[in-house]
Length: 543
Image (cartoon, rainbow, N blue to C red; front, side):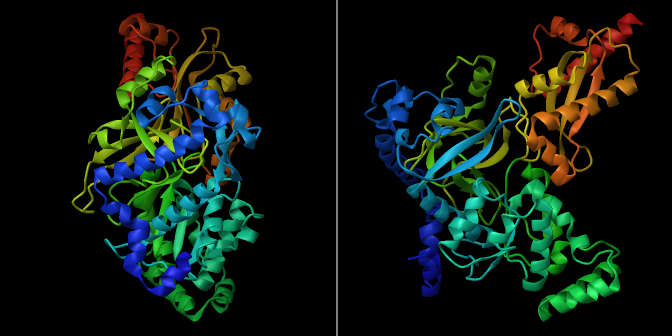
């Protein structure tokens, strides 16, 4: 039966149990599912040419041996097979190939195969996410045939392009604009068309990256008549459903009385709001204010698929037991492996995580997936091993960020040490030393890339001019090296680069004073503050 047929039967308790029943599991039952599905996947993966290539001919007989014999992997371990789409090497036949960014300036894209079993799990789990987004408590949800969905998603071959494809196989949902139109539109065109259709038909669901959702939401006033002529507004009224026209007039009147701009909540009453990607926490409060409903955060990725969701309480992510087998690298182990690439960090399973601890997640994708013990590159904090609010006995997590050697701004970038070195080299600037870290603005907590740069001694230029020159040059080459960085400005209007120039010799003085070099990417804020203190001491010593 499809989801639509299940809705027609009105067996809502049964539907909840099928899609959301994992929340009733205790940890022992949860791990039993994890282990059973991993044993099934082991047979497929270990017996495949891809698995044997990584295992070097060995064959684990149980889960413990699998975790010992299979090294932690990254995309480099699969690139020669997947980028050439060598299907004969894979554990199961792929139905579709998805694509995402790998690393700007070095590796343009990653591709990932999805099997029939993975697609079915994807459909089930996105339906769970929709139910969670509309839920007010255990057993309650509001998903209906014909619901409208604002299309704020990247189309295929990106993973979010699977959402309309998967949902259309399960029940009728109207995307605004229709998918067949949206895929041929620019981001701006989809945005305008979606809201115009929303004014006619209403909007039930909205799903997007937090940063994109915020940008789209802030454009409502201009797209809905703000600043337009009276004739244009009148024309809009005649194109709306009567109920929407009445809501529009009331909204305009209320905004005028309150002396504020139009917000989405004045026009639309969402059933469900979902967000995914990096830096969602920077936008959630504003999005709740704009729409009148707090987004439910979900965890998804090209390689792992949809693997986690918040519940009605929006107080942490729970991982679906059927998407992949989860392992976690403790924070101390993660940093050891960053400092020494030859070091193999230890991992713990879901039943071994500790509340308050920070972990890098590792995934083995089920249902014939290509990735085993795969370092996705995401870091989480365990919020607790149960929840009284959700009446759950499972660990829940909050998303922190990408791993420390990658700077991701608003879900758009994959800035690494290698990419910054390329940018500096291409720019031809006389940079002696540098560090780069992700920081957040003091006013709204928005993410940006902050580089602390030491110029060579022969760069005798005015400091203020040098900072602007550096920013201008580096921005040009960041856009050249990384298309996603370019899209931050093109799509979101963000200029994420800030430059601080430090005095010549400061990095060497820091190394002498502290006995260590600074990590080029994401050193701690304390270390950067110490760098600036060293600079001040050097200035006082010299003058």
